View 1 (cartoon, rainbow, N blue to C red):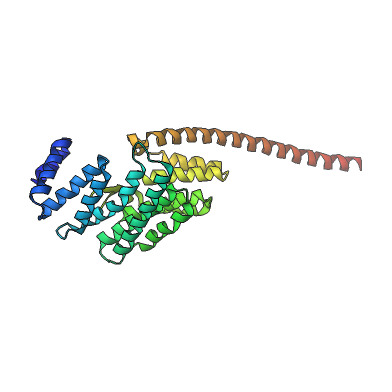
View 2 (tube, rainbow, N blue to C red):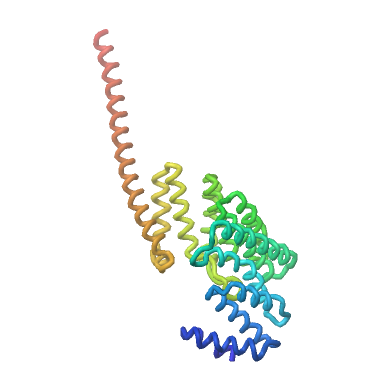
Amino acid sequence: MLRQAYAIKSEGKREEARSLFEKLMQDYPRTAAGVEARWMVAYYRLNDRQFDEAQRLFQQVADDPLAKPDIAAEALLQTGFVYLSRFWAEPPVSGEERYKLLEAAKTRLLQIAKYLSARTDEVARTAAAYAWLGVGEAFLYQGDPQGAEPHYRTIVAMKEGVSPVVLAQAWYALGVSLYRQRRYGEALQAFEAVKQFGESGEGIVLRSLALGNALPERAWLWQGAIWARLGNVPRSVAALEQGLGRPERLADAGNAALLAQAQRSLTAMRQALVRQQERQQRLAELQRLAQQLERSSVSAVRTVR
């Protein structure tokens, strides 16, 4: 029945699959399949913005000894990330309520990170790192990149036993937080670390949580923006060209606006580079003229003598 539910889901029959997951959850609550079905139902509730019910079901899965380790860890994480889902809900809640949701997310995810970081298995360490990511994300949403930074540094210091996908995302987020603090040199280094992961820093974390959409390309684009801010037009152009070298990597609907903006930026920076080169050429011509005038003046003095 569980395999059948997943097969129906993969065919795009959302309501039919959800009904089967719900039946499994209700009819077989004390089985591993029933617990996994509960996990899927919780995701349906989350997608339908039934946040309280989703959080309740996720907590049940996290507490159930029959839950598979990756499912239990992911469910536990969702009890914290549900606050971020509420934060982005449409229509948005008021400013004060949104701030409180971010505070609740930080509190819950910090609890989860500390609880899981005491374990040594890869699932727990990866989930703990993912929780730290969420804490940093909440700080960034509050406009506090300095507050976000130490949480990203906690992740990159973990290294062993942590999914490279989470590590790459941590370096990326660290680069963003450093950029927002105008620490451009350190931000360049963080984005360089992202590029070293390449496509191994993209994919699924635990059971279904996904991270790392075109991260190497995004890192190049960030570096292009930083070099432009630092006034190094040639390096900015080179970085932007690298980031746009495979536009299909940024061609999905979620990246459409980013791709269009990056292409416009590259066009503008190329034009700036041409102007800079023309200006340098004019300055070089003026310098050669000055040198010629200087030589002519010396010759004229010698002739008079």
